[in-house]
Length: 123
Image (cartoon, rainbow, N blue to C red; front, side, top):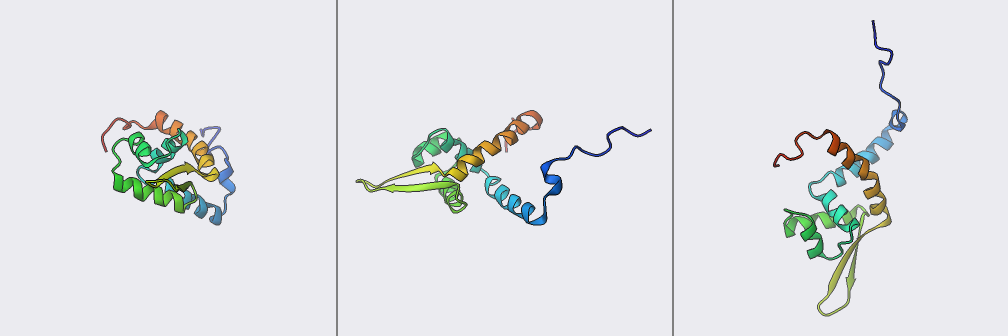
């Protein structure tokens, strides 16, 4: 006897076309990079300066933070502003697109909390 429900529930993804899947994959590649979610979260929590972001993302090196910030800028998720002071001051913030992404990532964070059995395991 078969189960009354043999197919998974339908989701919005059931009707996605190839182009939509490619766009989703590109977005996930950016935020799937190591440290990227931490950088986005630090910015969402109010960090603006490089040192504030570095202090908020435990374990990230200055070089890697520089790389991630540049990638997130290139993806349109982070905005960089140079303040003409002496010495020059640089501020980072989420773009509207980045802020929207942080909200969209919350269900994934909830999923990880529920299902990641290795959450406490070292990398």
